[in-house]
Length: 438
Image (cartoon, rainbow, N blue to C red; front, side):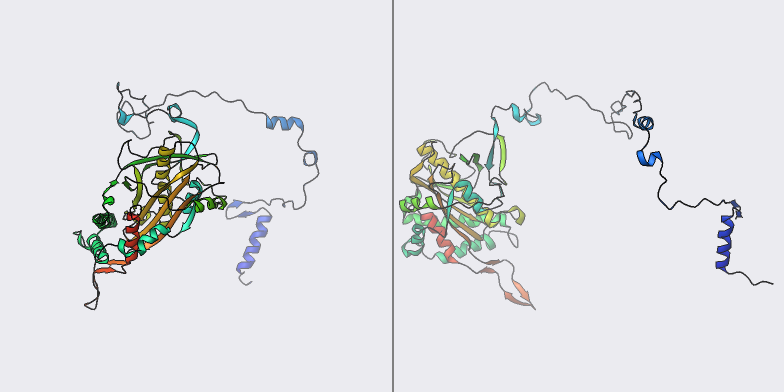
């Protein structure tokens, strides 16, 4: 008796049987011809392509069948949503009267103030990508680091300092950060305005020594509008901005005539390929208006200092320091330009008496100081006399306010209080307040 066949022998026998076309597992299989492994045979189709009549038959378009329009079935008659039925479309409802709250309004092209030429607007929500460099180019301004000598002279003179100012400022900070709240730790949107009001109150105490400080006025929610042209680009500073302190007398010029003439040699920095109008709002419906925000005859008609409070509690909603300084420069320039056009007209020229506007920005802890001097309203070309700005940036009034004591192993390691107090920051704040009076 022959030995039992192994698995490999059975597989070979099955393959041979399928090749001869025998019955395997009840299925009749036939041997297929071997696949052609060489090149295609040389026929008229493979050498010259299909004949023209065959090609025309393939390319010939089939007749398009007429489409029968069908009525769209909607659920309008049901008066409720029905799955599978189309959504009804009704004609616009005519109320019979004009409702301003539910009116789409006219198209931009149909408005009377529509202009073909676009205008780039800087408002209080604009965050400039290039910061101060971009604001310098837009306002044709030369930057000088630090505060001007006239302000530094006030800081260094002990006669212009408030008595016992360090203890008073510490109490103001403690009032804003520790005392004026029922919460464990107040939010920035609460303590930033409180600290600003307390510091302004301390500055007002100098009115007993300098009575001319009483001729000041704080204005809130006023609107500024200033329009100028810069290298064929129409620009505007418009809308609400910070808190403006007006005075009855203007701030005298900070830079001398020699310093103003020396700005002709200054070359403005560019940031190509970035457009200088990046992040500005482009509009086609606008009015070329120059307005200080106050009526004629207003006694406090001269802008003195613009205060910006970055009191948003969430960090992404606050301006970064570089963006805040650019915003301060744009609105200080806008207030100065609007006032200059009221005094000297709309014709671009070098001003006989420059207009000086200051700006202070803070988030309740970090302060930015700025003094801007408008020397010219001829802003189209980059040549000629430039404007001037002095910036003293990133000045901390204090490093930290400890609202909750730190306790380790039942021992108070850091009690509540104000740490890292820097009195020089308040001296600069007070000097800008006194500038133009002393």
